Length: 235
Ligand code: IPE
Ligand code: IPE
Ligand code: MG
Image 1: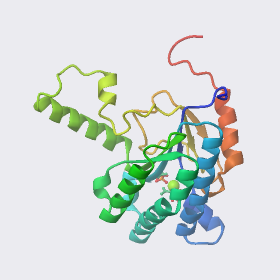
Image 2 (image 1 turned 180 degrees about the vertical axis):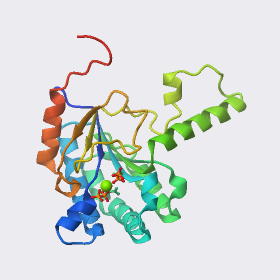
Image 3 (image 1 turned 120 degrees about the vertical axis):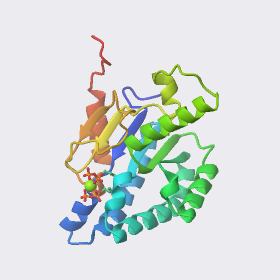
Image 4 (image 1 turned 90 degrees about the vertical axis):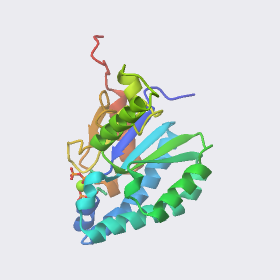
């Protein structure tokens, strides 16, 4: 039986890898390596709790401004994780989707993403969404561009409402996040799902992402279960 007050879609801004590494006297990249252990733990726990969509902010449009070595380290890690975690996806019946501006990614990474996406397409326990080279403003602008192109081609008309605009976003078909978790003590949205988080519940924790595992995830879900969502209405 489905658990009560379990969010359908949980999203996480996975932050604090660099600070975790520094605390442990290591290079920043080790924080990112350790962070992949948290990704696996959280995926498995999300499946266990019956969450249907888990989206993870892995790399923002703005993260390209980091030192070249860190950016290439993160891209290599992404590629390796997709290959290494394939068995985890299959074992847990997880469907993988990658959302973001793929035009900025290497051909090798795009090939691997397409491969894992197609091989896991029929898995129906949970959809794991990796937000890669993503930003909320990018998403809104690309939606507006696609709408304008359709309008020009005569494929749509001038009447545009929230639902129809939603259909142009990169996340179309995925319910808006019910719960957004951000680790590492920062309390900002950092150009994440600006449109989609209109009525999302936020949960901030000081725990750094590499230390965010099952117990911390459980605490966030416990906090969510006590929230009163009113959507502008009265209760
Ligand atoms: C999050 O950790 C990972 C990415 C943004 C890719 P950070 O790398 O931002 O870690 P801090 O915030 O510097 O500690
Ligand atoms: C947000 O974290 C992006 C990801 C987690 C991928 P950042 O570390 O890049 O955000 P800021 O710079 O602290 O706002
Ligand atoms: Mg950060």
